[in-house]
Amino acid sequence: MRKPELLIPASSLEVLKTAVIFGADAVYIGGEAFGLRAKAKNFSMEEMKEGIEFAHERGVKVYVTANILAHNYDLAGVEEYFKELREIHPDALIIADPGVFSIAKRVCPEIERHISTQANNTNYETYRFWYGLGAKRVVSARELSMEEIRQIRANIPDECEIETFIHGAMCISYSGRCLLSNYFTGRDANRGACTHPCRWKYAVVEETRPGEYMPVYENERGTYIFNSKDLCMIEHIPEILESGIDSLKIEGRMKTALYVATVARTYRKAIDDCLQSRELYEKNMPWYLEQISNCTYRQFTTGFFYGKPDENAQIYDSNTYVKEYTYLGIVGEVTDEGLCRIEQRNKFSEGEEIEIMKPDGENITTKVLQILNEDGETQESAPHPKQVLYIRLDQRADHYDILRRQE
Image (cartoon, rainbow, N blue to C red; front, top):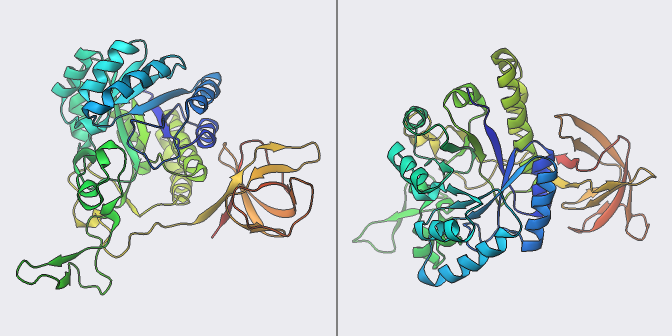
């Protein structure tokens, strides 16, 4: 049994730091170009440098995505980008395109190259191919079952690492290579600009009756026929640990710090407990399930791990998330007077009960006793997003703790 890496996404420097504090072994991020989440906040080169230093000081690795399917006009920019990355020392580049791979191998050979799930990695010969070209790791296609992953492990060099998604949103298209967004809106999902048309509402139009829209499912609101449930493997950690996977990947490079903290903390404890003993893992299962349901999610499925998904893996009546908690902010510092500095994310008020979410798994209910702005003036509520505030709580909070409110 291998001890796998827990790999967590980060959309910003704040979220990267949260992932590191809440249990990540590695974090993957995107720069301002050449990744598949163009709508994410993403990182400037200066933020990347700071994030990499922050992570490395705490023994955590950072991987940078460069997994677009490149066109000719992208290549010169890719080369310059990799020259810049070479100076700030990320631990790996996540790449899908063979041309981009070749540039990385030539420009910054000292940085590991990982092959993105976008490259359709469905068999052990593909793993051998990329490993032979110098890739350290290959990310498995989401269409693989647990048995297929075991077979890959048995047929590739021991030094060739397997990375697999175990939690997060599922894409309707094969290995995430989608044409719907480009067809409907001109925004290419394979170059980072997906508009998520799989979450839209659809009806059927019969060829000889144009303009006559018939619902696919008998429901006056139409149906969301492409809308998959979210992947969640928290109940299957023992099988994952026995499969030979080296890195357990969480999807969500556009998620909030609250989401990242919740998922990282829950999987961290589940993995560590299971490595300690199967009995401890099973005993704590109710806690894992309760915590993971505190995330924003679309109902859960095990994806392709135990066979091809059927109609039960889809959500037909809604495209909205289940949301049980609202993210209020991260404790930036605690003053000598006991005031917590936060950059507010959602409204809360004086006298309200909220929760302090700690990296060790503890959740503490606390009351907001006082809210002060940067000028030291009191205010009854915090209605303005991103306002810097100092708040007094009746329970202790520490730097990097998450503040949230139950809905």
